[in-house]
Amino acid sequence: MLLITSHYVEGYRIKRYGPLVAAEAVMGTNIFRDYFAKVRDVVGGRSGAFQSALREGREAIFADIQEQARNADCNAVIGIDIDYGEISGKDKNMLIVAVQGTAVYIEAE
Image (cartoon, rainbow, N blue to C red):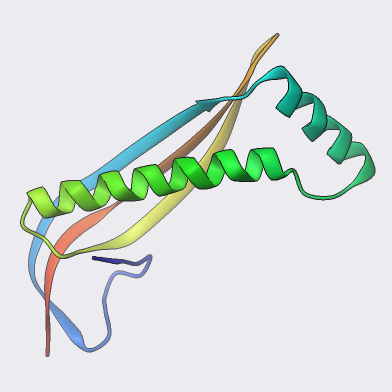
């Protein structure tokens, strides 16, 4: 299934618009991941633990919006918007990934 951020697909035409598809993933972090992420903030570099959690969340919600599109008899999702966020609490942080787009049925021109 085609998943794109633009609102049209070159060489294809939209035969039918389906519903808005959306999904969210909220992932808890643990004390060790938080601690090592703070160390990375000080010394520089990428936090593999956080990147892995965000990647897993993004993959899960992409699978979810594809299923929603298939259930609406669509073969693509256009206009995809991906948002990331964090909720910080006293003892725990939560990572949020949210995706939305429009399910469509496209055919080659």
